[in-house]
Amino acid sequence: MRAAALYSAAGSLLLTALALAPAGSAPAAPAAPGAAEQQGTAVAAARARAAGIAFGKCSDIKDMPGAMQCGTVSVPLDYARPGGRQIKLTVTRVAATHKDPHNSKLRVRRQGALVYNPGGPGGDGQYFPLVGLLPEWKRIASAYDLIGYSPRGVGRSAPLSCEDPGRFFKAPSQAPTHPSESYKQERIAQAKAYAQGCARRSGSGLGQFNSLNNARDLDVLRAALGEPKLTFMGASYGTYFGALYATLFPSHVRRMVFDSAVDPAPEQIWYRNNLDQSAAFESRWTDFRQWIARHDDVYGLGRTVATVQHSYTKASAQLAAQPAGGKVGPAELQAAFLSAGYYDDYWPRRAQALSAYLKGDPKPLVEQAGPATEAAAEAENSNAVYTAVECNDAAWPTDFKVWDRDNTRLARVAPFETWDNAWMNLPCAYWPAPRQQPLDVRTGPGELPTTLILAAERDAATPYDGALEMQRRLSGSVLVTERDAGTHGIAGGPNKCVNGYLDAYLLEGRTPDRRASCAPHTEPEPSSADRAHQTPLKDSLKGKAPRG
Image 1 (cartoon, rainbow, N blue to C red):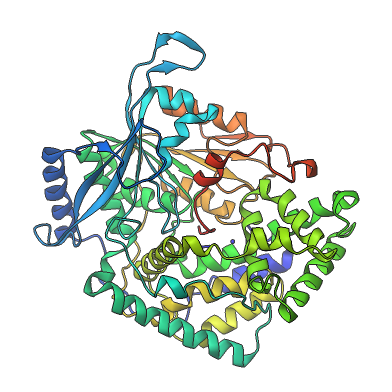
Image 2: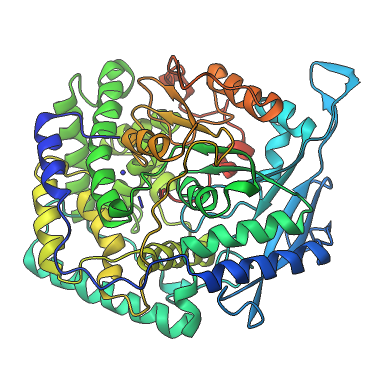
């Protein structure tokens, strides 16, 4: 999924209406998980436990610190046939340092492996172990082996592809907030071609790239690491298949952190979650415009939300007529500002680029919004995995009239992200592989150890209601909320209160009774437009283009 609730009466009423079952949905596959897949997971886990992971030098990854090691674990492509085709997942590790960052003479006891997934779908976690170099993570890195991995389909882990990477970036592009009928027909044709390309380039195993198999892979990885029980942190989409894991394998859980939780209700996966996300981004876009307006003395983009919107709309119209640098049009502008909806430390740079462009200097905007063609293969792969997993996971409407109805209504009150999100997901209407029926995420009292949910109240990518639903479904879970904040993924970030709860849970197993709150982190200052405070490492650990 790609945009927290729309905080307006109109938006709430609209989303209530959209909660009706989507008409024209494709028939779902039989209920999952099946006994064959469960048995297949046990077979694969036993095999992985015996084989282990031969960690060594990361020869295929450039510029890696020597402390990080790489290896692979084999998993079945199809868990119903554990003796059939195997695929290898890339795994990375930095061993626990045993060093207390506050007392160099104190040796810290190792607590096992902490496995991380950054979300997506399509996010690559192979660089996660490097967070141990950041001050906010040093205590956790002292006690845990930090484990990252590339999920199935991602990177070198049986990579998926749906089109020629050389054609992936189609820039400059338009991004109409209220598209014409001819434009809709053009996007329908593109969606059909993309879905066909996924089938053609990925083969008969395309349907095996789904969230249930991601959860099963996690259990095989646990076994390969020699861990009797799993300690796991998932961000965004990683919270969803983490919740599937908790439902499928509750006795295998030691500790789990759900950072920016997806709404796991079966009826939300994934069509409705994307509608909710599009609505939520409108609220976050308003937050950003309010911030720009408060700093009109710096940017000159307007003193009100409306005048800032006028500046943005003016820039979009100018880019439609004449793309900046020949490669930044309205769609590239929108994508750059969408990323600011995920991370508010992007706000100064984005506002500065918009201001400079309207004053006649397009260079900052081209630098920030232009397609990164050198990363085309990685971006195409990530998008292919995103599409395959979401399309495979559940039924989607197969009649474009349903998409048209729902997104036209939503765009009237939430125009910023609505249609862009719809176009990204539209291949699912024409998907060639069988669909799963979403698992009913749910655990009873005493079935699962205490788990920790972290959520920002105004997170746009995973609306806050998802965290509340996750807590209702995972018995005994605890929710920590960063109030009046909207950064997506708050673990190990700038909020010391949130990090205190994270450390207490992972290092000592301590949690609040049920819910706790933290004041919001400090908003960015416009003087930080060059983001000198932000390290390249922190940038890289945020992951790729926004997803869920």
